[in-house]
Length: 205
Ligand SMILES: CC(C)(COP(=O)(O)OP(=O)(O)OC[C@H]1O[C@@H](n2cnc3c(N)ncnc32)[C@H](O)[C@@H]1OP(=O)(O)O)[C@@H](O)C(=O)NCCC(=O)NCCS
Image 1: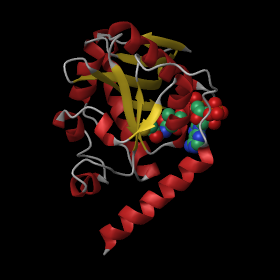
Image 2: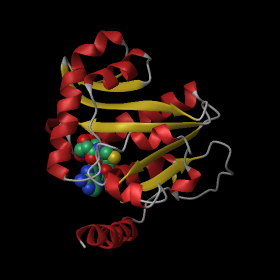
Image 3: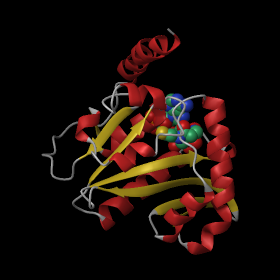
Image 4: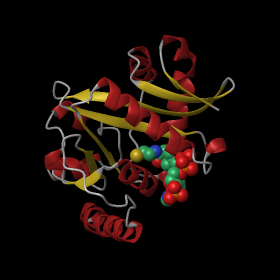
């Protein structure tokens, strides 16, 4: 398995990246925004993306998005092809994209939003902390990326204050505490179910 920093020579993978994201969104039913090939190619071209390849075969992907004049960067669009899940590949990709973000944007706060327990776990281990949406970028363009998520109406209703996703942030200038970075998964599963009850019930009324 190769983990590479993307460039234009990887454009041939943009379609399979989009298809895998779309298929996974259908299966999971929540919390994954669709992407177009143009969108993916822009991230491949500017070297702000990581690809995992098994020989020539697409295995996984994640990209960096820059917000608020480089004050914030997001690590988004993490996807592992179903054939390669459960082997620690997402962890390797996440680590690579995190290291690339730290190298290219050393002063930026790194953030992400997710409904996925796997991503929360990985972020937490990298030193991210859960935060309210008010601590993330206030760039309205960022939230536009959520328009193709099926829960977008919740985000609109709450004026981008909250949604089913949890916001997580790595602050390079925060004081480091010596502690073990292990997520309390029980608490997050409970929080997610409370949010779903609250927001999805309201939607049905
Ligand atoms: C989520 C996803 C990226 C995980 O990829 P993966 O390569 O199977 O993940 P890894 O094997 O590297 O596992 C990383 C950690 O997450 C955990 N994990 C993986 N899938 C999980 C799941 N469905 N639920 C809970 N935890 C999960 C693993 O146990 C591991 O934790 P550990 O180190 O404590 O054991 C992959 O399932 C995927 O592409 N899903 C669809 C797209 C998606 O949900 N993307 C995230 C958008 S925010």
